Every structure is written in C-alpha cells, then in structure tokens.
Length: 119
Image 1 (cartoon, rainbow, N blue to C red):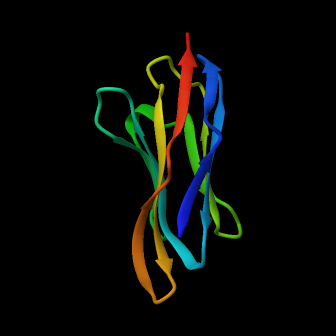
Image 2 (cartoon, rainbow, N blue to C red):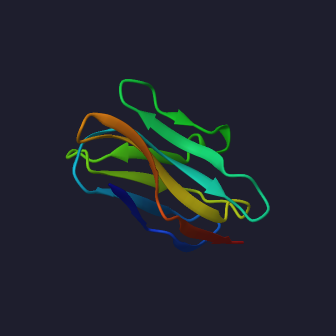
C-alpha cells in the first residue's frame, strides 16, 4: 500500500489549493487520514485528521479555511485549502492508517508535496 499525493503548487496569498492523496494497493479501508506540514527549520505539524467514527480534527491555525474529506469510494482523501497565508508555505504530507489484507492496521506517509504562497 502506498499514498500518492498531488495538487501542490504556487499560489498568491488568499488563494486556494486542493491536495489529493490516493491510496494504491489492496486494502480494506482507510481508518485515519490526514495531513501534516513541515516548513524549513520547523518540526512537522498536524494540519487536519479524519478518524473514522470521530469528529475531524483541525489545527487552530487552519480552522474555517481548510477542509478534509474522503471520497465516496474510500480510496482517496483531499484537503481543500482556502485563504492561504504567506506564512503557510511548507511541504504537506498525507498520512493514513490503513486496514490492509490480513487485517493489520499500518501507518503510511505520502511523498510530500510543496505548497508555496507568495504575498
């Protein structure tokens, strides 16, 4: 199982981007899926996390501007980022806990996608 990210890029302050995270490989279901980001010199921080059966958790800094969701087929997740700020450029990483064949739950990371915000 792998997570394949796309959708990063460059946008002006106040603009929007939509990140995608597709789960490839055989699996039963996504248990958790979310996004982290890491700016140069900073630690990786949680942006948002969906957990099956629980309320989606958002970092205070992005509440009201970012939204994550899982597609109806349960094979991909998305993060809609609106009103992006100049202080938010970072590499954004998809993270997921996947229930895989053999009924094991494993954690996975995407390869990361760069988001650049110009003022």
